[in-house]
Length: 213
Ligand code: ATP
Ligand code: PRP
Image 1 (cartoon, rainbow, N blue to C red):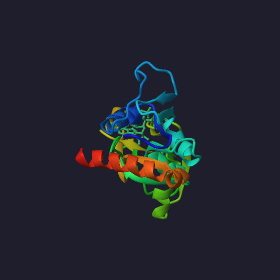
Image 2: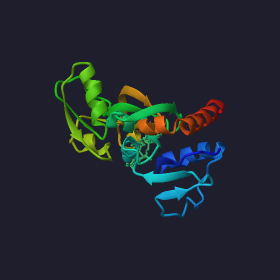
Image 3: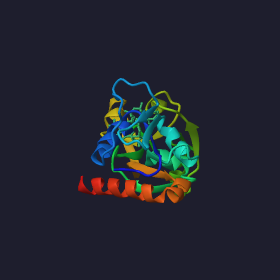
Image 4: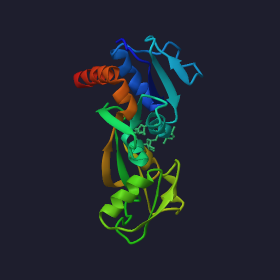
């Protein structure tokens, strides 16, 4: 795949990078560096005009929103927190699939007034409980949320669940389903206009790959 204009794609290290690389490979894009050993944050690819930037998962929408990257791959969970300003979301890549749940001890009552909820996903948590008219106290955490009910910091948490093993290992269970999560391709709105031909080519090629999976 050849591009006429320079294209920068923002990815986060870990799960998203690992799951996105095979998709890029299928449309003829791969990094030149050894991804297992490189400490570089900007990776050249076999395509002259295509670069990958490696950033924190929660920073991907911000880089794309401000045009520091034309495209990004980010979890729907991260997008819901970010709000999606300045972004198009042209494609569900169907990778890094999991679900967002309210979780806690099996006997937790999730309908009490002023339920104390700890989460990294404060926007999604607020939206979920407010949608049914329930007032909650929200405690923002940045990780290890399973600890919160155990030490009495919160009644419940809002967290991602895939196999349920992390909850189970900590004596917790999923209590209420919030939404399905997968990773999305996001595009900068200005790039979408100014580099439209290349952007469409990239999105269409990825769409074809996903539809064949
Ligand atoms: P940060 O580096 O900012 O802490 P992170 O640790 O959340 O980010 P990852 O664990 O790589 O980064 O997760 C990236 C994305 O993958 C998440 O935003 C989510 O959409 C998805 N994800 C997270 N955990 C799982 C899981 N257990 N199974 C499937 N997908 C997941
Ligand atoms: C994610 C998420 C959950 C766990 C759920 O954590 O935050 O804790 O996966 O997956 P499971 O239901 O299959 O156990 P991850 O392993 O990515 O660690 P992190 O939060 O430290 O990034």
